[in-house]
Length: 487
Image (tube, rainbow, N blue to C red; front, side, top):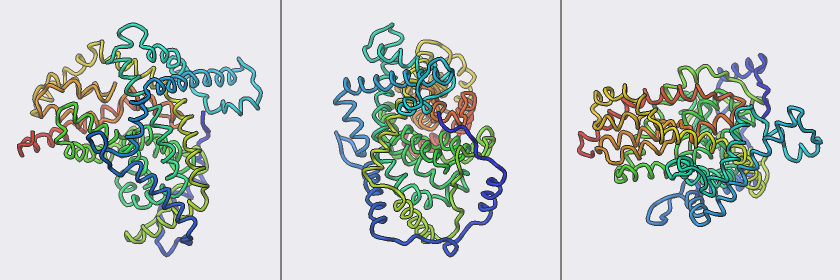
């Protein structure tokens, strides 16, 4: 699918290690001349992306961002067209992957010219993900038409996966990629990354530019965050370890989804506190997990020639000058705003074709398991006394909600919708902070980053570790709010 060659030769690693030990100051770097053309292009691209993703506007009785308005308008106003579009992408993914795998295995002979036009090397994958994409292509028509056994097409299973996940991701990725690519190609990544270095590298062991991935997830979607990560990874600006950390610690749910969860548990009046608690939880878990296995054991390798951040040290003003210089340099090298937007849309469309079938097949299996089997009720029983010990009410309801989020992030909120306020707050913050779930982010990570590789067992382990860290932290926050009479 992607270039599998790891760039980890000794000479290059030694050189980059030496550079990391010798951070530069503002006097050591050659600042780019600030000329009107490149600075105008950078500023315009940055403002367009900033407005689209970050500027709050009133809409339909609530405050949201233009990105959310566009996506919601498309999926709500044209559900049939969106469904046909998503169906076409999933079927195309199954067909293109099959062609690529047949050609790779010598079953089918195609000319190099045709293979190049279809970019068949992009669609190559492992046997399991070939199966998942084909299974998604087979299942998609049934879910689109609502035809099939009740357990498959019910609103809590196939209806949830198709209507809530597939349609949203199919629209979110290409549209989000248009505006995110403006940041990546025209200087925004360099500027944000430079300004975030004093926090990201010391605290989380990742480049400052990873802050853009996090922001893309918070204001857009984890799928947009994954797109940014994949894009930067392919440019040699992230190592495999960087990718693993970013995907499992910072590909967060959007601000809008936090609001949906808060509404579901009837605590929308506490939305600012829920969101603040969520950010604290993300920071705490990230700072801990990057220092222990499995994240600490991921090789610091690249899949192409490395282009790591230039080590730098200085005052806030120095960082601003250096960040602006790097941004203008990137904008000068980049193409036009229209060109960057078109390339972003095409890349986003290809990415959606690549991953939607996998999300559908694995996601459907996950929610069916959660809905129709007692698996999570059984394995959560040892957690009941733990929840009781922490003083969280309705422990029998809270315990399964604590772990069922590994299937789909929204299910825990539904389970505790009628529980005590403390229990509802506890699960609301926990569910949005666990990050890893196999109706979407799990298969998306494994398929998009098969060259890292991100394995199923590692994701399950990280979900468990995140939950172990989060449960006492969120319990303490819950009791603090209760002490102030807010719950």
